[in-house]
Image 1: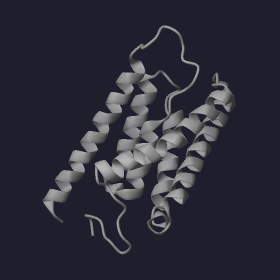
Image 2 (image 1 turned 90 degrees about the horizontal axis):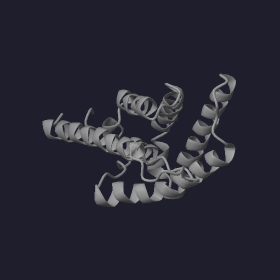
Image 3 (image 1 turned 135 degrees about the vertical axis):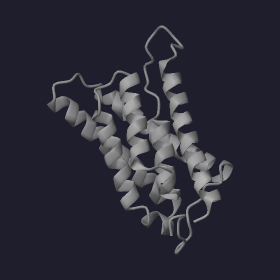
Image 4 (image 1 turned 90 degrees about the vertical axis):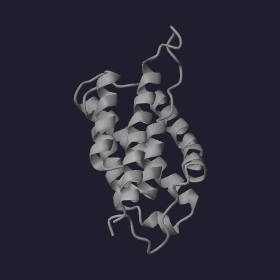
Length: 176
């Protein structure tokens, strides 16, 4: 194993943690005193999904859990509800990532969008069962639409600007 590849992996992990801290920071800044009518897309889910499909060693399980638990704490959401949903979505993507090597972008986009929709539905169900106030369904629909629309943009940045591409068929990772 090359130490250079290991250092690049650590560098990407640190960049992902700093990027998530930046997103939390922008969620906490009051840009306006009135509430926004439309939710923002979950850019971090798009980034994590694209990285899991391309280079899963960059996004280990514990980093995803740490990042989303930090989101729950700082944004004062029910602790662990969204974290569990995202960890489940990440594990589904990780277990099926070999299917993305052969299939075109449209399949990847549809699959990640449906996984995000399923995570939203599971979270909404969990919150409803535990008698916690739930966001309106229309807000969740808009969040899904905006996140699904943001995925191609995030994927373009990751693939062509950061140059993190899918491994070729038969290619091995840094662990062998």
